[in-house]
Image (cartoon, rainbow, N blue to C red; front, side, top):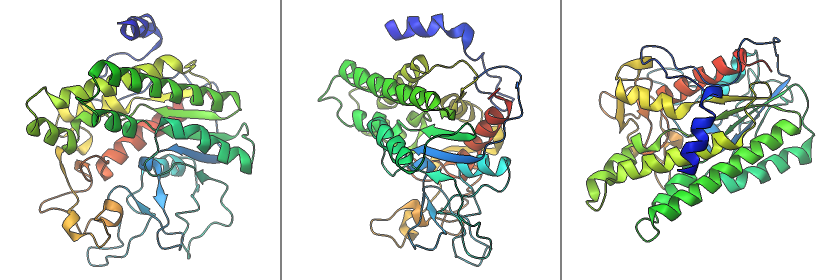
Length: 332
């Protein structure tokens, strides 16, 4: 109740109701007061923002649907099927990340960084920021992205019912508060920050399966309540003055495409599009999922989820569009 009351008091400063027929807008200020052009982009968070250089050739793999040059060439090209931070980076020009900078089009010494790590939770964000500070201080031209917390919610959920929902809620609220504190820290250090709420993972194939597998309570709604608690705590903690910090509402975007199939080109929000039986990795993973290894009639752009919990190209594009809109409209 305390969180809900606080959220209500800030409602006038937040976003309005989103229209289902429109691309969802996110919070953070009115008309831009300047045409901000970043000098580098730094990504923090979990695997949603990771490009993993498995082959040590600056042609990394993603936790999504990886792109290939053609319908017959299975070679992964990290420049294709971009994840959201790549969409954001390309909207400002030729910004590339070191783990996606393959020979033939390589940019010399790109200053951009991916500090996001696989499996990261809220408690890991501080160390990611410290790692960046160990290399260089933040500058006024830095645009940083933050997306972390889904792993916190899922880790807490797996402890139910051994741990009560009341205690799980308190734990995810604490995680949301921690992310908010680190976002404020980044802003205080001089960076311009884009912070996304975590996607509503109650809409994932994982959550749908959990609902079907348990009769003690509606597990899907339980996960949704935990997501809401995390995101509410995060939003209450950040100094969202619309100037230093721009807020992207990915949780609301997911709910909209679930409610309205076809919105933003996403027609399937319930099924994982990657066929993990075609993975050559051990254990099988979407890190080598491509448009050539999808389920029958699957479409990377029309499906929301790549596997049971990670965004497909359609979900990444949705998030990328929101981030681009916020970054270019926010009065940084």
